[in-house]
Structures are given as C-alpha cells and as structure tokens.
Length: 372
Ligand code: ADP
Image 1 (cartoon, rainbow, N blue to C red):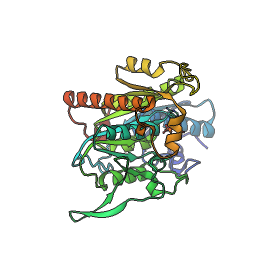
Image 2: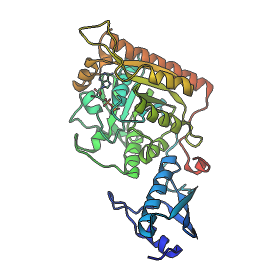
Image 3: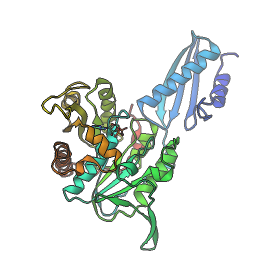
Image 4: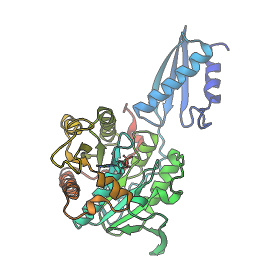
C-alpha cells in the first residue's frame, strides 16, 4: 500500500478495535494528514480530553501505520477537543432535597472502595444524618450483598404524577445499585453511554426525599466511563480511597488529578488510607504494615488534601461485609469507632468545603478545551 493521505484516511475509516468491533475513531475524527518523508502528522478532533485517551489514540495510530507502512515510519499526533454539546446528557440541576453528593472513587480496584462507601454511609446514618447510597460500580456492584438486599428490587411508585423508583432501605441507608440492572455475578460490559444512562436513571428517577448525604460508589479508575459518570452529576466533592502501596498510590494520584482538572473541578474532600496496617486478633498490640507505612498519608500531604482516615485491615470488616452487616454497625468496637471518626472527618471537610467554595456544577464538556 502506498503511503499517501487517501490511504491513511481509508485505513482509519476501516479499522476496528479487536475486542469490540468498534471503529478506532468511533466518536472522533481525523481532521488532517500531513506526510513529510517518513514522518506522518495526524490531526485528530476527539471528544474525550483525558491524557490517557490521547495516549491510547496515539499508540493505536502508530501501531496501525507502522504495521502497514514499516517500522521506520514516525507518527506524530495533534489533538483538538470536539464540542459535543448535544451529546452530553447533563442533568445538572441539583437533586431536590439532596444537600451533598459525594463520590467515592479509587484509582485501582480492590483497595476497598466499596467497603469504605458502605461503612461511610452506615456511619453517617448512625450519626443521624439522612443518607442515600448509589452503587455505581459497574465492574462489580456489591452493595446488595453488603446491605443484605440480594434478590430485592426497588418498587415503582407514583410521586406527584411521575413514576419514580423507591430506593431499598437497610440500616437507615436508602440504596440503589447498578446491580439491579443485571444478575449478580453476571459479568457485563457497560459502554460509556449505557453506564451513564443507567446511572442517570438511578440518580434522577429514584425518590430520595430529604437527604443530607448521597454517597456514590464509583467504578475504579479514571477512564472514559468514569469520566462520563462524573459528568452526569453535580458533585459536592470526591473522596479517593487508596492503600499505602506505591502502585495504588500512583493511581490514587491520577484519581485526585482527574477531579482537580480545570474542566472537572470537583473539590477533593480528602483521601482515605484503607488497609493501613494489620492487627492480628490474637496479638492486639502488634501492627503489621503489610502494604507499606503512611503512603496515602504522605500523598495527602504532598497534594495538600485532607487525610480523612487510616483504616486497618481487620478480618471482621471483610466478614461483616460478606454477611451483609457493614462493620460500622458494631457497637463501640475499635473498627466501628474508626469508621465513625472517618464519617465525622468527612462531615467536617464537607462543611468547610461548603463554606469556602461555590456549588459544583455538572461538568460541561464544552469547557474542556485546552486541558491535557
Ligand atoms: P473495591 O471496591 O475497591 O474493589 P472492596 O471494597 O470490594 O474493594 O474490597 C476488596 C476486598 O477487601 C473485599 O473482600 C473486602 O471485604 C476486603 N476489605 C476491604 N477493606 C478491608 C479492611 N479494612 N479490612 C479487611 N478487609 C477489607
């Protein structure tokens, strides 16, 4: 195949991604192609402004062109951000009656994000706040198990002539879950718009009534889906969960940076260090720093954000979650007190945030020009 503009354009038009059969440039356009000897410059217009996405398109383009035209070919990419006003389904009004919406996220899976979300919700309810919880973890909705609500589904009710979904309730927490849209344990692959639509439904079609806190357990990561979920909600703030391990901290940093991007601009309420240390039940005076010591604490200091809690690894936390009774429900145990103190820190940080900063608006993609 000859190296020319037309052939390159056709190549991008025809190429699909292996795993999904989607076009390589599904939502994006190749605006211009310039060829100088063995160097090709590609100008893209993309709808996802994240650095990760740009790197992905750059990597795939280089791979594609070098495969067709030889390894020695140099590929350079330029990106501009597409205005996608019409595609964005932002329903940016605050939810009537809901005072604070807090997203709980983590850079990496398995660090205890869902455990932290469940226990934070229960602890806030124990402190007499009115609490709702949305399980938006599309990769493994686990709240129905943690709240002992497996097999239950929310009922449709009529509120002032509109069909609404009545959240399920346990331990004084109103809960809805992505798990309601799928069978438990059934792996489903959500695409961005599907996930966004389902989350929108959970947020806006649920009859929350009056809430002090609506906690949203987001999927892990900072990818496309995550971004589209964040765009759907006018968040008061975000909490990032990490273990003290270097590899988790690197991802937590990315998570914090995503919320801080000019175009997203969601205040980070703070970071929670989970699995900070392990105390064996039979040796209560011993502490083992399995994943390293104070990693998230140091990260919080570096990023100048609050460290909200350091939660130890305790067998009963895992057992309580699996048994459908989050550990924060225990009466005056060291671990339940850790969760209560964590909830108090969250309240303090959110109140400070509300005093000092204006309400967050749902992200408008049209403002995203110029972010990298
Ligand atoms: P994520 O939502 O980040 O994927 P989970 O909340 O599902 O992570 O937690 C992963 C596993 O670790 C679960 O089995 C959970 O019960 C366990 N776990 C989380 N935090 C703790 C903790 N502090 N002590 C003991 N087990 C924990």
